[in-house]
Length: 183
Image (cartoon, rainbow, N blue to C red; front, side, top):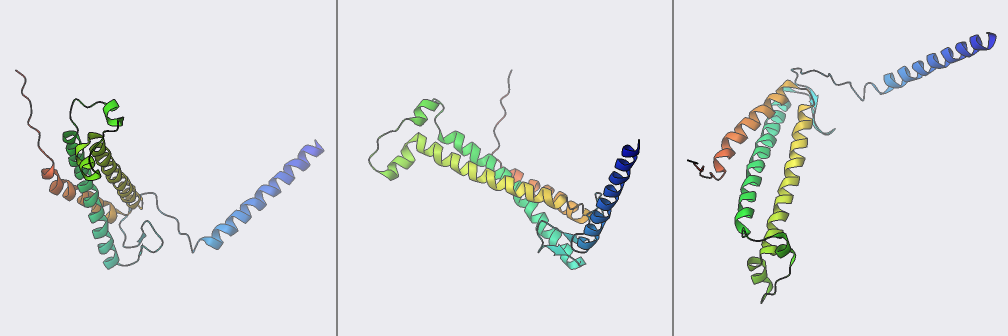
């Protein structure tokens, strides 16, 4: 019983000391690292994405909302551009071309003719373009998501408006495929 009581007192002292050290460390770094609220709020002060994008004024907030709005418009435009590039890729490859033919090497007179006459080369360049556009779209999507995760309502409204404007402007650029009526 005496050992158990001694062990319990020692453990309690260690816990208390650990809590004191944690509190002291938090207070030492609190001015540098402020806690973010985990709910949406309206404010003209926010840090977005990087340390240098620290908004402290209403004019800075308006500019930041405009930048985030343009990022969202660009994201929607790239999404539509990716769909158009996919359509071009489908049209560039003959429908009877299978995977074996894409991997075969065809002989041609020169490299310029090879680039345009060889279906595997066309497929490669279209696929490389699609991959690049996809990477750009993913990076922009994550940047916009991180902006929303600042939980600033103004920034969130800027992202919503940017997505709406981007979709409204870019959607008519999509190639319209005629619908097939089955009778």
